[in-house]
Length: 554
Ligand code: FAD
Image (cartoon, rainbow, N blue to C red; front, side, top):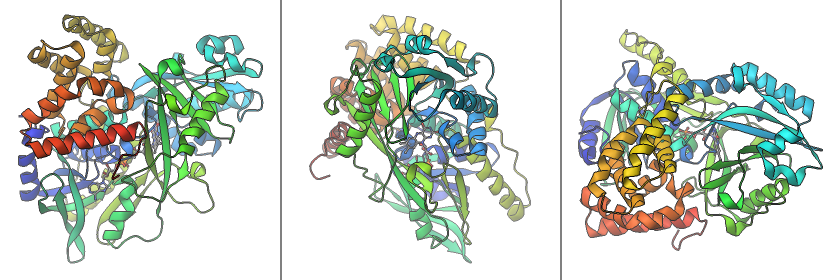
């Protein structure tokens, strides 16, 4: 049985209880996932624990771009832009099905924050820093070319000066996290979701164990380890506090909200990065049947486990869109779904949320807790490399043995390998052909391949079990089986949110398939009636929250 099968979870928890690890990573977001993969492929015995589901923190709530961060150029963050800019192509190469090219249009508007010359220069520097080549290099478009790319900008044609057109990549952050975790598991790491770290154990003042709780069974136990890395995102300071090492630099949490509308409400043809009247910039990105819009950037000091979306947040994004696409005004009621995440930034005196650096930093406590925070989804692999380089030194000092150098730039993520993006497209056509037999369409093929890459074949194999049903249900049930057996999918919300993205990008489909999916989960995972009810209630609560309706007792 696959080591990440939810059916094998009991065995995994036993391994955590009984084995001695070199490294335990706390936090199953993209940072922790990247560290686990890097560390186990250099020869360390690694466990990763996540208190909720993998990617349930910030790593399922980003703008889902693998981007160089054009706006950081304005803040002269040259080193950051160079690193993440270059990482884009690397992460694309490692998972071209999941990190897909997405051309971005930056309209130049009279009185806007970027002039024509500054934009042209800025995008040129951006390309040079990131080593962008060939047809991906930026182009400056005139008004006619701009309107051809995005006819919805015609509302601004009197003050439109043209646009910058440049290359970025789009992903699904939660799937990028889970594929890193799966690849780590294939290389010997032991990842477990729903295991929280509560406290540390010490020997002669140095951490040698983590007190944990299994959040599904309620059982408490200790994991024995030589090294601990906390990649707990917005919760990094909570763990530093437990370790009594919260001194010096601290986290600053900034909230970012996205809203999703049906594509016909804002039928943009392509991704646009545009000015907001307050001087910030936001994205509007088409994604199959919807367009998503974000993000806000405001200080947050509430509960990181429950991040509310206020009327002001929604209105800010609605007004920003209506200001740019004034012939296609949207309303708050058009919002189909939404999400809010927290940027775990490093506090800098006197700066606003959007001015604060996105650089990552490492904190080390005297008792051996290594924490990493800040950074970007895009730069996760380099962040992991820095942490494991540091561990490598410590390992050599302690055990007089050298670890191998970082090799993650050569390790295709699970779902691959694909030679290049062209190979992804050819494979997608093959899947589309095969899906016809089940009454499914080419957009279903695109969805399956973007989410699962070559694992779409494994999902196809499972479709026959349900072939008497409607096409949409056949696919959802095959996905559910695959996710339970291969992706540690323990709860309904893991499936509908972080494995499939339906909670954000296809909310209406949940209503259509949920009955059968609930039955399947109940049967495969042997849930009793209490558990079934708990799971159904939790799913309903998350559906309400995605619609931005605050459920009772929240
Ligand atoms: P998280 O994803 O939050 O992971 C930390 C994990 O630790 C959580 O899952 C949490 O449950 C777990 N945890 C905490 N405490 C414990 C404990 N005691 N025991 C066990 N587990 C624990 N970056 C980009 O490159 N591109 C973008 O488009 C982009 N857009 C963004 C938009 C928004 C609105 C935001 C907020 C961020 C965006 N970012 C983007 C930044 C990026 O999303 C984050 O840098 C990244 O996801 C942080 O990942 P992480 O793993 O460090 O934290």
